[in-house]
Structure formats: structure tokens, C-alpha cells
Image 1: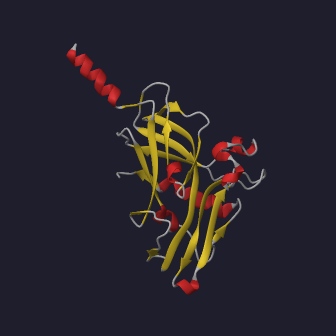
Image 2 (image 1 turned 90 degrees about the vertical axis):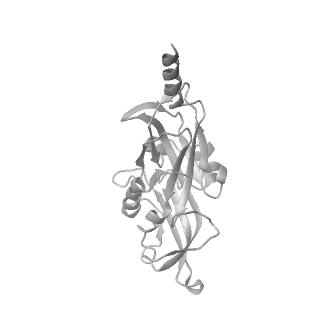
Image 3 (image 1 turned 60 degrees about the vertical axis):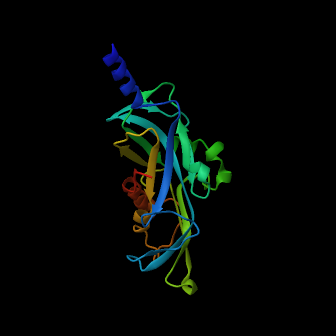
Length: 226
């Protein structure tokens, strides 16, 4: 009986509780992002200062291997690194579920886009909505780059689009989860390395440049160990 009780307690401890915490962190040059700091990128020979970074997390699922064991309803979260509270939220399964991976999308699905602008984190006042035709901005990165303060230039990357062939929504799998609180790093350095700051410092509408850049999202999210 004692053995069976111990086995039950162990199995329960490796399951999601009714308030599973998910926390997104942004790292740049192996440091926590500070919006007031300037970072040097030797590969670009540029200094970079981030003014704004926001992206949508949606379609969240807890996974056991390749099998989905729980899906969040109305799954839309706007992560805004100017608002620390928005970088953390709770998943609330109706009952404990055993899982070892997290699956989510970066961006808003086509069905929601064609439904028109909605409320909550999808409210257009959040600054992440173009028009009914173009839909939602899935990720927004804005800032400045310069070799010296006198050469400062702006960059703006608004990545979105839900229609083929330029859909930008991407599915992310975070595997090997073992802890109650799920911490995920967004490696901004890896993303910036994909940008052509000098030749194309802006993407402001759906199209091939944004769709190509969105593909890099799948390689820049990983388990964080804060």
C-alpha cells in the first residue's frame, strides 16, 4: 500500500496543476533585455537600442510526447516587454495532466483574423492590428541602430499576414519540460542577426520579406533556466 501511495504522489507531482505558470523572458547578447540599454553587435558593426518588442502567443497546448493532453480555450496572449505583467500568465487545466512539452503559435490564426478585430489582448488599441484586410501584427520590433550617435537610424519590423503564400504564423515546440513553472527565452540576438538593418530597416505590411523573417521564430525560443 505504501508503495502504491508513493507512486501516486510521484505521478501527481509531474503533472500540471490548476495554475501552471508560463513566463517569457527576452535575452540579448546573453543578458536580460533592458529597453534603456544599448547593445553592440560585432557581426553587424552596429549598436542597437530596442524601443519596443511585442508578440502574440496563441493556440497553447500541453503535450505528452507528440500527443496533445490539454488545449487552452480562447488562447491569445499579447507579450509586451514594456509591460512586465504581460510576460507571465497561467494555464488552467480542469484537472492535473502529465506533460513534458509545450506547443504554441507565434501569431494569430486566419480564422480569428477574418472574424474582425476583437477585445482583450486582441483589442486594436493594443497597437497590433493593421486593418480588416491585413489583420493582426504577429510580432512588432522597433528601435534604433547606429555606429555613432550622430548616425542614429530607426528600424521597424511589423511581422504579420495570414493569407497564403505569405502567412506568418509559426508553431513552436518547447520539449523536455520538467518543472512546474515554464520559463521560455526569446533569443533576440538570434532574431536581430537575421535582419538587414542597413538595406531594409522597415517591414510594415504583409508580404514575402515578413513571411521569410517569420520562419526564424522556430529557432529562437528555448527553455530558460533563470
